[in-house]
Length: 522
Image (cartoon, rainbow, N blue to C red; front, side, top):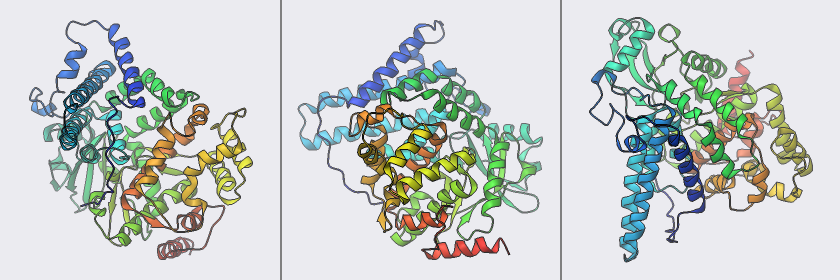
């Protein structure tokens, strides 16, 4: 069982937190404006928020279609989220009313009951909706700082155990894509999926020549669901503007649209996976499953079957083993960005399989960001100025060049340094450091707390498209490392991988990796 640091109970102020009310009002207005222009006798917001999606938790759908993503479009999916928010808000109000005359123990019990009901609602709604909204739930599951344990645990189910589609529906998609039924394509086929997530689900199979493989099948309708989610651009724009008034959201939404659209194309994902598999083939600690092209298509991806421990199992391993797997993930992250100019932008725990020797198998390459030479050069200049040379005026110039900070921003170099130091903290000094939950929480607050320290500076910041996926990577990895309590000299490891430092190995894993690199040139 994972040990988590105890959190002091939060005093009940009798009001919803500032950021909740602003976002809640914004979403409510969006719902009202959207539905006010939609008049159809067969559909209402009440219908959407109170009825379950057919097929997965309900008993309405035909058995063959159970698990297909509902096709209610942007209005239906938006209304479903509105219903979720209304139920959560109603529970909050009821709990507060009941707590007026409750003692401390009863107050805590009421809060726990409310959290459990809300968590179950969130998992059911997002799990059934799939697509981009389910990805938000996945991200919340590993960026769990400040979430109640019941909510975090429930959301963790979305990483690999979302409600699956029926065996008949999965087999019909496979047959349509590959031109034959599973029994003709495989020696053995398991109709029960071994994992189900936001875009598709995975089945275990054995090929006629005896290869064990993982077959990922895309949910019918998920492309339309993601298109509907991304079509709600106005809501996304408003949500972002609440946090960052100086932000230009259009390029960010377009970047996310491109990445998610690519993720729907399994042929594109196969190309990404081959890129990483070719680069890391033979690496002593980084493993990428091979793609089986003859059993893959635009909506079916068949790869080598990988096994290993899940993240939930790893958190109970001894600390030295947790440190080793964290080092592997860190080396994969830094090395991929600066040596391969690409990185997997979906770093949730369900995409890793861990091994006691410290090796890690990396899965799911649908959402990959490939950086240009100019973009990686920009990252290098920012790192060199901030970390290597500690030249803050030059770092500020690079922020302006990158489009992060306006040239006329009325903030001192000291204020700029104070805000951005957090993002470089673990590589600023050449010493052993431990990732903690407190540090991860500070990272989330640094970005999303619109009323905290540096609030005025954050109002003028922008996020260039090239940094959107990179920031998601950073937040995801920091959260994972914090849950592992990962300890290492992160600066020395990074300097082994940064092309502008090229330091000698500082760990046994680094020595093994260096030997592997040298063997490639023999």
